Length: 158
Length: 182
Image (cartoon, rainbow over all chains, first blue to last red; front, side, top):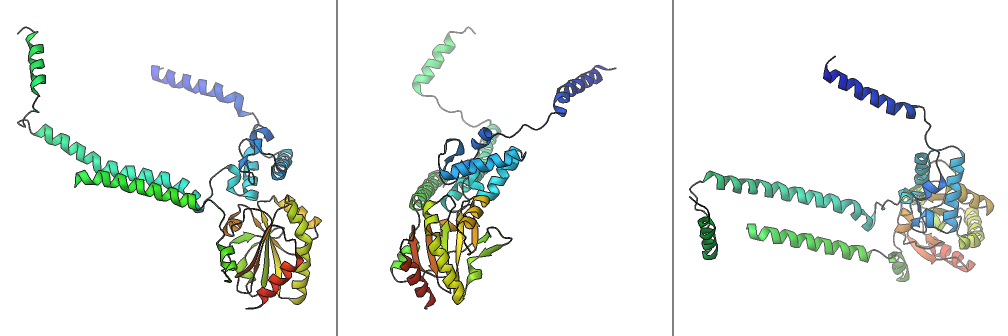
């Protein structure tokens, strides 16, 4: 058995050992505490976990009802969205000024991409032009820098 | 040209950011464009959305009620003033149904369906309601408090507005009479 084959077998064995305990495990039960930290009170505009209003109480009662029916956290959040719209997840609305939350990042990325697409070839071309012209005059040093260079070079023998 | 492009681009981005900020600040408050138009004696076209029915299959838009007087009422089951004015709206519904000239149309604002249906049953409301889950229709009317009522004429134009609980029965009667003319 080659070393590589032995290594692959070892990795597979480790993966199997790690996966085995979770294979038969049930999905974690949904909890009100967990869900209310992930959703909003739609009329209060604050997370449900800190909301105190009649609507917040009704949202909690609705969540408890669905938990009692055995629904998962994902299912309960989907049900809340179906009832109260995507705003219940704290997502920005998709109309009016709130659209900027979605549009501005995309616009910035597009702008930066265009800027890089224009600038990078220019930088590369400038670098290539310098490399291709060995006879191009070197940059001139100032008088002070020139004197310091001579003094430094004088310290070394040869 | 190269030296101008960079600063020009930066200036354009800065101007766009400032314009976006101004626009955002300008749209923060609830719109009162409908109120201003009605106060000036005009009849602005009522905003419209297609929304699911409450407690019934399918969806409807306000346009489907064209040709009838419409009393559009935004409510929620957790809204105490909404419960207080519901009998007035039910009375208006009886009158409009008796003459066949229109209907009251409720809009359940960001309300859970079981709670909204419970409200309808407890108040014995006969008029239909739509579900405005995300408040898009309410936002189009500048609704930021409940209840709010808009009376529309047969051409889906707003003729009267009540921002808040209807406390005078005469308001509905006068608004409906106005909607039936013109």
